[in-house]
Length: 90
Image 1 (cartoon, helix red, strand yellow):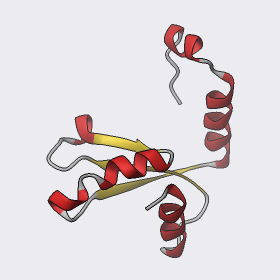
Image 2 (tube, rainbow, N blue to C red):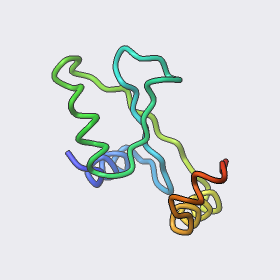
Image 3 (cartoon, rainbow, N blue to C red):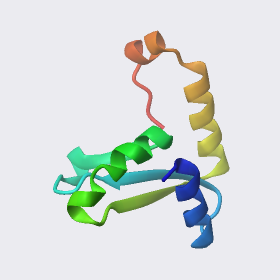
Image 4 (cartoon, helix red, strand yellow):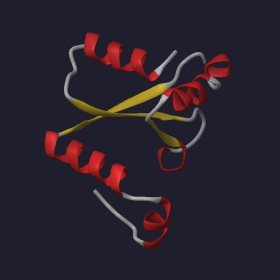
């Protein structure tokens, strides 16, 4: 499974626009077990839990175009040293 496949499944369900995808590690609380899915590596990590539980809880977070643009700019412009020096909230 890939990030692209998740994105396509969500579109088939009728959701469109800017989305963030999350999953919860089975058996963990939302505070400790919620993980962001941003790339194929994250999807592979999520799939490691499937054989043990057969189901994974996924969550969609719909972003406005403005929020999505801000997140993209933030990720593109910050280097590792800036992230360590400054806490940024969206």
